[in-house]
Image 1 (cartoon, one colour):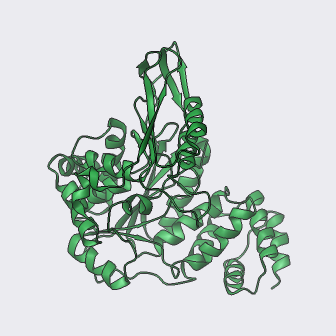
Image 2: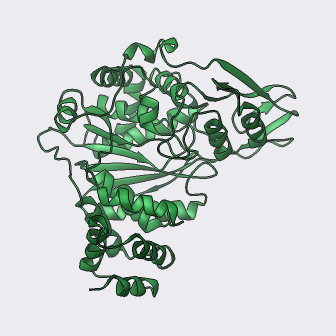
Image 3: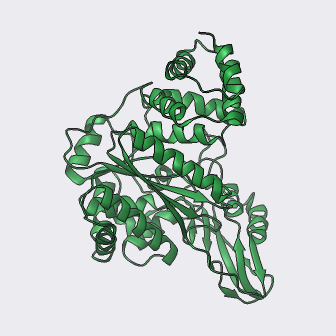
Length: 434
């Protein structure tokens, strides 16, 4: 078969056979198919889409392009959670320990910050000594002993996805639902899961801005899991304003720790209980979703989820005391308040602008090789729907370098919309898929 013929057929909206998808993935991974041809194929997919059968085969080929983790020796049902990314989204640090405290085995494979969204590994690595570069043996041992481990994707897991993602990033084909779905699911299924809970974000701070697109993404990923005999459930959740109050790595660790000690923000706590409940239910540690919710709430209130996070941090070289003695975490040297220009109600907070401003002062990265400052970030003082006075503090910027603070403060002030009329309350959990 010829690559140019497959490009032409996909461009014209035809369905490719499983062996043709395999030919493309294997050929590109090995270097037999050049970037320019694979770029053309990705653009054809972007415009013409893929059938369910094509997406499943693409996922399977990327999954099998490298190593897969065999967790058969670890007793128990293995369940992970994946978020499509947002601003202030520290749910993994809370949800994984709650599920593990209920007896679910949680192999939490996480990513790093890129663009305006945060990364779980960066947040955890703001804890002194914490590391995620474990061997396969260490990973399995920790899962067997504690039931929870945080790791990053290795070079050998789904290498076809890594190569394809880098190409998508520079060819304006990132936003394709079939390509996003196969990318996420190939990495997740490579880690030896039995079940997966997805948090698909929608809104200004999310990758998907429209609910219809978020729904399509959720349905596609749930369908891939079902066809590969994995239990997958997805929540579509609001990311039109930051989740919780803290944005920035060490700041989010602090808020996650407070939440696990039953002193967290309402929106963050509510979402984490629901995500953890789904993991507990799919992990067969509860007979119903209501029972799973009660279990998640119980592990939050009695502190067993917090204890589980401390265990995992200690096992991975981190100092668990930093989870309640926040002076042990990286701390910013400067603080800048952003005040409300007028009295009224907060009608919206543009999450993407908050994430971008946080990046300006060093909390994120624009390129994978960029360094981040774990100490810096933004703490909101108000959320949507709250009443503010003229001159009252909307948020605080914490920084260690002053060079872009003024620019970031202006962007943050513009992110807040203040009106004389109280806005209608927006649901946090918009839909359930699967």
